[in-house]
Picture (cartoon, helix red, strand yellow):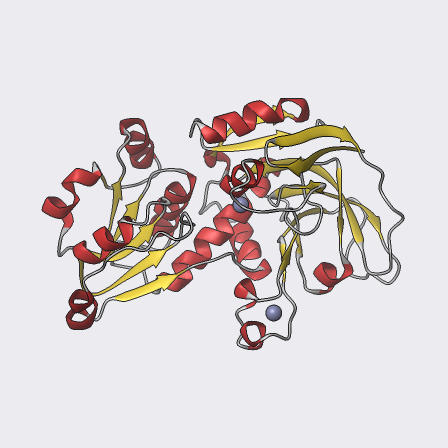
Length: 338
Ligand SMILES: [Zn+2]
Ligand SMILES: [Zn+2]
Protein backbone atom coordinates (compact mmCIF):
# COMPACT_ATOMS: atom_id res chain seq x y z
CA UNK A 1 0.00 0.00 0.00
CA UNK A 2 1.01 3.63 -0.38
CA UNK A 3 1.77 5.38 2.90
CA UNK A 4 3.35 8.56 4.14
CA UNK A 5 6.19 7.41 6.39
CA UNK A 6 7.83 9.71 8.93
CA UNK A 7 11.52 8.84 9.43
CA UNK A 8 12.59 11.78 11.57
CA UNK A 9 12.21 15.56 11.79
CA UNK A 10 11.85 17.03 8.29
CA UNK A 11 12.12 13.58 6.76
CA UNK A 12 8.89 12.06 5.50
CA UNK A 13 8.19 10.24 2.24
CA UNK A 14 5.32 8.73 0.32
CA UNK A 15 6.36 5.14 -0.22
CA UNK A 16 5.17 1.54 -0.55
CA UNK A 17 4.64 -0.30 2.73
CA UNK A 18 3.70 -3.96 3.24
CA UNK A 19 0.67 -4.94 5.31
CA UNK A 20 0.73 -7.97 7.57
CA UNK A 21 -1.99 -10.64 7.78
CA UNK A 22 -4.51 -9.60 10.42
CA UNK A 23 -4.05 -10.96 13.93
CA UNK A 24 -7.02 -12.08 16.04
CA UNK A 25 -9.11 -9.12 17.15
CA UNK A 26 -7.79 -6.67 14.55
CA UNK A 27 -9.67 -4.71 11.91
CA UNK A 28 -8.22 -3.25 8.73
CA UNK A 29 -9.68 -0.08 7.27
CA UNK A 30 -9.36 1.20 3.74
CA UNK A 31 -8.78 4.90 4.32
CA UNK A 32 -10.39 7.48 2.04
CA UNK A 33 -9.59 10.74 3.84
CA UNK A 34 -7.23 11.81 6.59
CA UNK A 35 -6.99 15.24 8.20
CA UNK A 36 -3.74 17.11 8.78
CA UNK A 37 -3.60 18.22 12.41
CA UNK A 38 -1.33 20.79 14.05
CA UNK A 39 0.22 17.88 15.93
CA UNK A 40 1.22 16.23 12.64
CA UNK A 41 3.07 19.41 11.72
CA UNK A 42 4.75 19.48 15.15
CA UNK A 43 5.84 15.85 14.62
CA UNK A 44 7.17 16.66 11.13
CA UNK A 45 9.15 19.57 12.56
CA UNK A 46 10.50 17.51 15.48
CA UNK A 47 8.71 19.56 18.14
CA UNK A 48 6.57 16.62 19.23
CA UNK A 49 8.68 13.50 19.43
CA UNK A 50 7.64 10.42 17.48
CA UNK A 51 10.08 7.63 16.69
CA UNK A 52 10.30 6.72 13.02
CA UNK A 53 9.69 4.93 10.87
CA UNK A 54 6.03 5.65 11.58
CA UNK A 55 2.93 6.31 9.49
CA UNK A 56 1.51 9.37 11.21
CA UNK A 57 -2.03 10.83 10.96
CA UNK A 58 -4.71 10.33 13.62
CA UNK A 59 -7.83 11.86 12.02
CA UNK A 60 -9.21 9.58 9.34
CA UNK A 61 -12.27 8.09 7.71
CA UNK A 62 -12.65 4.90 5.68
CA UNK A 63 -14.44 1.62 5.20
CA UNK A 64 -13.72 -1.72 6.85
CA UNK A 65 -11.80 -3.85 4.34
CA UNK A 66 -10.81 -6.84 6.47
CA UNK A 67 -11.96 -8.28 9.78
CA UNK A 68 -9.61 -10.37 11.90
CA UNK A 69 -10.51 -13.67 13.62
CA UNK A 70 -12.76 -13.28 16.63
CA UNK A 71 -14.10 -9.80 15.86
CA UNK A 72 -17.86 -9.41 16.03
CA UNK A 73 -20.20 -6.46 15.60
CA UNK A 74 -18.59 -4.98 12.49
CA UNK A 75 -19.28 -5.53 8.77
CA UNK A 76 -17.08 -5.45 5.70
CA UNK A 77 -17.61 -2.19 3.83
CA UNK A 78 -18.93 -0.43 6.94
CA UNK A 79 -18.13 3.31 7.04
CA UNK A 80 -16.13 4.13 10.14
CA UNK A 81 -13.84 6.57 11.87
CA UNK A 82 -11.32 5.55 14.50
CA UNK A 83 -10.87 7.30 17.78
CA UNK A 84 -7.05 7.27 17.87
CA UNK A 85 -6.17 7.06 21.59
CA UNK A 86 -6.00 3.55 23.02
CA UNK A 87 -6.45 3.66 26.78
CA UNK A 88 -5.03 0.93 29.03
CA UNK A 89 -8.22 0.55 31.05
CA UNK A 90 -6.50 -0.02 34.40
CA UNK A 91 -4.44 3.05 35.36
CA UNK A 92 -5.82 5.52 37.96
CA UNK A 93 -7.11 7.83 35.22
CA UNK A 94 -8.89 5.02 33.37
CA UNK A 95 -10.30 3.74 36.68
CA UNK A 96 -11.72 7.21 37.27
CA UNK A 97 -13.46 7.09 33.88
CA UNK A 98 -11.02 9.53 32.31
CA UNK A 99 -9.59 7.34 29.54
CA UNK A 100 -8.63 10.40 27.50
CA UNK A 101 -5.83 11.15 29.96
CA UNK A 102 -4.77 7.51 30.44
CA UNK A 103 -1.15 7.52 31.61
CA UNK A 104 -0.32 4.48 29.46
CA UNK A 105 -2.14 5.66 26.38
CA UNK A 106 -0.93 4.68 22.91
CA UNK A 107 -2.15 6.60 19.91
CA UNK A 108 -2.58 5.69 16.27
CA UNK A 109 -0.36 8.06 14.35
CA UNK A 110 2.10 8.46 17.25
CA UNK A 111 3.16 5.11 18.73
CA UNK A 112 1.17 2.98 16.27
CA UNK A 113 0.89 3.39 12.49
CA UNK A 114 -1.89 5.82 11.63
CA UNK A 115 -3.94 7.28 8.85
CA UNK A 116 -1.81 8.86 6.12
CA UNK A 117 -1.97 5.59 4.18
CA UNK A 118 -4.29 3.54 2.01
CA UNK A 119 -4.93 1.16 4.89
CA UNK A 120 -4.67 1.24 8.65
CA UNK A 121 -4.65 -1.78 10.95
CA UNK A 122 -6.58 -1.17 14.14
CA UNK A 123 -5.04 -3.14 17.04
CA UNK A 124 -7.20 -5.61 18.97
CA UNK A 125 -7.09 -3.44 22.12
CA UNK A 126 -8.59 -0.54 20.16
CA UNK A 127 -11.28 -2.70 18.54
CA UNK A 128 -12.15 -4.05 21.99
CA UNK A 129 -12.14 -0.55 23.46
CA UNK A 130 -14.78 0.60 20.99
CA UNK A 131 -12.39 2.92 19.14
CA UNK A 132 -13.85 1.91 15.75
CA UNK A 133 -16.89 4.18 15.52
CA UNK A 134 -19.57 3.61 12.85
CA UNK A 135 -20.52 6.66 10.77
CA UNK A 136 -24.27 7.31 10.35
CA UNK A 137 -25.48 7.25 6.73
CA UNK A 138 -26.45 10.93 6.88
CA UNK A 139 -22.86 12.00 7.53
CA UNK A 140 -20.69 12.62 4.45
CA UNK A 141 -17.19 11.19 4.12
CA UNK A 142 -15.70 14.67 4.42
CA UNK A 143 -17.65 15.52 7.57
CA UNK A 144 -16.72 12.17 9.11
CA UNK A 145 -13.03 12.84 8.42
CA UNK A 146 -13.33 16.07 10.40
CA UNK A 147 -15.03 14.45 13.41
CA UNK A 148 -11.94 13.69 15.52
CA UNK A 149 -10.92 17.31 16.20
CA UNK A 150 -14.61 18.17 16.70
CA UNK A 151 -14.81 15.47 19.37
CA UNK A 152 -11.76 16.95 21.08
CA UNK A 153 -13.50 20.33 21.02
CA UNK A 154 -16.54 18.67 22.60
CA UNK A 155 -14.37 17.37 25.44
CA UNK A 156 -13.37 21.00 25.99
CA UNK A 157 -17.06 21.86 26.25
CA UNK A 158 -17.52 19.09 28.83
CA UNK A 159 -14.71 20.59 30.85
CA UNK A 160 -16.35 24.02 30.58
CA UNK A 161 -19.66 22.76 31.98
CA UNK A 162 -22.96 24.40 31.11
CA UNK A 163 -22.75 26.79 28.13
CA UNK A 164 -26.44 27.54 27.83
CA UNK A 165 -27.10 31.21 28.49
CA UNK A 166 -23.41 31.88 29.16
CA UNK A 167 -21.10 34.39 27.51
CA UNK A 168 -18.24 32.56 25.85
CA UNK A 169 -14.92 34.02 24.79
CA UNK A 170 -12.95 32.05 22.20
CA UNK A 171 -9.28 33.04 22.06
CA UNK A 172 -7.86 32.14 18.66
CA UNK A 173 -9.79 31.84 15.41
CA UNK A 174 -8.03 28.83 13.84
CA UNK A 175 -9.62 25.39 13.44
CA UNK A 176 -9.88 24.85 17.22
CA UNK A 177 -11.49 28.23 17.76
CA UNK A 178 -13.96 27.66 14.93
CA UNK A 179 -14.91 24.33 16.52
CA UNK A 180 -15.62 26.06 19.84
CA UNK A 181 -17.65 28.77 18.13
CA UNK A 182 -19.75 26.02 16.53
CA UNK A 183 -20.13 24.09 19.78
CA UNK A 184 -20.97 27.23 21.77
CA UNK A 185 -23.81 27.95 19.35
CA UNK A 186 -24.89 24.30 19.42
CA UNK A 187 -25.13 24.32 23.22
CA UNK A 188 -27.02 27.58 23.48
CA UNK A 189 -24.43 30.13 24.57
CA UNK A 190 -25.84 33.62 25.04
CA UNK A 191 -23.00 35.48 23.36
CA UNK A 192 -19.94 34.12 21.56
CA UNK A 193 -17.00 36.50 21.33
CA UNK A 194 -13.96 35.70 19.21
CA UNK A 195 -10.61 37.30 20.00
CA UNK A 196 -8.16 36.94 17.11
CA UNK A 197 -5.44 39.20 15.68
CA UNK A 198 -5.94 38.23 12.01
CA UNK A 199 -8.77 40.10 10.27
CA UNK A 200 -9.52 37.26 7.83
CA UNK A 201 -9.91 34.85 10.72
CA UNK A 202 -12.14 37.30 12.59
CA UNK A 203 -14.44 37.44 9.52
CA UNK A 204 -14.34 33.67 9.29
CA UNK A 205 -15.30 33.39 12.95
CA UNK A 206 -18.33 35.62 12.35
CA UNK A 207 -19.36 33.41 9.42
CA UNK A 208 -19.19 30.38 11.72
CA UNK A 209 -21.52 32.03 14.22
CA UNK A 210 -19.49 34.26 16.53
CA UNK A 211 -21.61 37.25 17.60
CA UNK A 212 -18.64 39.56 17.96
CA UNK A 213 -15.05 39.36 16.73
CA UNK A 214 -12.42 41.61 18.27
CA UNK A 215 -8.69 42.16 18.13
CA UNK A 216 -6.91 40.86 21.28
CA UNK A 217 -5.76 44.43 22.04
CA UNK A 218 -9.44 45.33 22.61
CA UNK A 219 -10.04 42.52 25.11
CA UNK A 220 -9.47 44.30 28.40
CA UNK A 221 -11.68 47.28 27.45
CA UNK A 222 -14.53 45.44 25.78
CA UNK A 223 -15.19 42.15 27.56
CA UNK A 224 -13.83 42.43 31.12
CA UNK A 225 -16.49 41.33 33.59
CA UNK A 226 -18.79 39.91 30.91
CA UNK A 227 -17.27 36.52 30.21
CA UNK A 228 -18.35 33.25 31.88
CA UNK A 229 -16.27 30.76 29.89
CA UNK A 230 -13.01 31.14 27.97
CA UNK A 231 -11.67 28.59 25.51
CA UNK A 232 -7.96 29.10 24.87
CA UNK A 233 -7.62 27.91 21.29
CA UNK A 234 -4.17 29.22 20.39
CA UNK A 235 -0.85 27.97 21.76
CA UNK A 236 0.15 31.26 23.36
CA UNK A 237 0.84 30.83 27.10
CA UNK A 238 0.11 34.47 28.05
CA UNK A 239 -3.51 33.95 26.95
CA UNK A 240 -4.04 32.13 30.26
CA UNK A 241 -3.33 35.32 32.25
CA UNK A 242 -5.40 37.38 29.78
CA UNK A 243 -8.31 34.96 30.22
CA UNK A 244 -8.20 35.07 34.01
CA UNK A 245 -8.07 38.86 33.87
CA UNK A 246 -11.30 39.18 31.85
CA UNK A 247 -13.42 36.37 33.34
CA UNK A 248 -16.21 37.39 35.66
CA UNK A 249 -16.82 35.76 39.03
CA UNK A 250 -17.59 32.06 38.87
CA UNK A 251 -16.05 31.89 35.41
CA UNK A 252 -14.11 29.07 33.86
CA UNK A 253 -10.98 29.06 31.73
CA UNK A 254 -10.40 25.99 29.56
CA UNK A 255 -6.81 25.56 28.38
CA UNK A 256 -7.58 23.68 25.19
CA UNK A 257 -4.63 24.37 22.89
CA UNK A 258 -1.29 22.69 23.44
CA UNK A 259 1.42 25.11 24.50
CA UNK A 260 5.17 25.31 23.88
CA UNK A 261 7.02 23.39 26.58
CA UNK A 262 8.39 25.15 29.66
CA UNK A 263 6.54 28.39 29.21
CA UNK A 264 5.04 29.33 32.58
CA UNK A 265 2.80 32.38 32.95
CA UNK A 266 1.87 34.67 35.81
CA UNK A 267 -1.73 34.74 36.97
CA UNK A 268 -3.29 36.81 39.71
CA UNK A 269 -4.26 34.20 42.33
CA UNK A 270 -6.63 36.66 44.01
CA UNK A 271 -8.78 36.70 40.90
CA UNK A 272 -9.01 32.93 41.17
CA UNK A 273 -9.66 33.11 44.92
CA UNK A 274 -12.18 35.95 45.25
CA UNK A 275 -13.79 35.20 41.91
CA UNK A 276 -13.93 31.42 42.39
CA UNK A 277 -12.48 31.11 38.91
CA UNK A 278 -11.92 27.57 37.62
CA UNK A 279 -8.82 26.96 35.54
CA UNK A 280 -9.11 23.59 33.77
CA UNK A 281 -7.38 21.69 31.00
CA UNK A 282 -8.79 19.60 28.17
CA UNK A 283 -6.94 16.86 26.34
CA UNK A 284 -8.14 14.40 23.74
CA UNK A 285 -11.63 12.95 23.87
CA UNK A 286 -13.33 9.54 23.80
CA UNK A 287 -14.97 7.24 21.24
CA UNK A 288 -18.31 8.17 22.86
CA UNK A 289 -17.75 11.87 22.20
CA UNK A 290 -16.75 11.17 18.60
CA UNK A 291 -19.96 9.19 18.15
CA UNK A 292 -21.87 12.10 19.72
CA UNK A 293 -20.32 14.57 17.27
CA UNK A 294 -21.30 12.30 14.36
CA UNK A 295 -24.85 12.22 15.72
CA UNK A 296 -25.03 16.04 15.79
CA UNK A 297 -23.85 16.10 12.17
CA UNK A 298 -26.39 13.43 11.21
CA UNK A 299 -29.14 15.50 12.87
CA UNK A 300 -28.09 18.57 10.91
CA UNK A 301 -27.10 20.48 14.06
CA UNK A 302 -23.36 20.68 13.32
CA UNK A 303 -21.79 21.45 9.94
CA UNK A 304 -18.39 19.78 9.72
CA UNK A 305 -18.13 19.96 5.93
CA UNK A 306 -17.84 23.72 6.35
CA UNK A 307 -14.63 23.38 8.35
CA UNK A 308 -12.89 21.43 5.56
CA UNK A 309 -11.21 23.95 3.26
CA UNK A 310 -9.11 21.66 1.03
CA UNK A 311 -8.87 18.03 -0.06
CA UNK A 312 -5.47 17.16 -1.57
CA UNK A 313 -4.28 13.95 -3.24
CA UNK A 314 -1.70 11.94 -1.31
CA UNK A 315 1.24 13.01 -3.45
CA UNK A 316 0.54 16.64 -2.54
CA UNK A 317 0.94 15.98 1.18
CA UNK A 318 3.81 18.46 1.42
CA UNK A 319 1.61 21.26 0.12
CA UNK A 320 -0.93 20.33 2.79
CA UNK A 321 1.69 20.52 5.54
CA UNK A 322 2.90 23.87 4.16
CA UNK A 323 -0.68 25.18 4.25
CA UNK A 324 -0.91 24.10 7.87
CA UNK A 325 2.40 25.84 8.62
CA UNK A 326 1.16 29.04 6.96
CA UNK A 327 -2.21 28.80 8.77
CA UNK A 328 -3.78 28.83 5.28
CA UNK A 329 -7.18 27.23 4.94
CA UNK A 330 -9.00 25.55 7.78
CA UNK A 331 -9.04 21.74 7.90
CA UNK A 332 -6.94 20.22 5.12
CA UNK A 333 -7.62 16.59 4.21
CA UNK A 334 -5.41 14.13 2.35
CA UNK A 335 -7.31 11.84 -0.01
CA UNK A 336 -6.06 8.38 -0.98
CA UNK A 337 -8.05 8.78 -4.20
CA UNK A 338 -10.24 5.76 -3.63
ZN1 LIG B 1 -5.44 16.12 15.78
ZN1 LIG C 1 -5.10 3.98 31.49
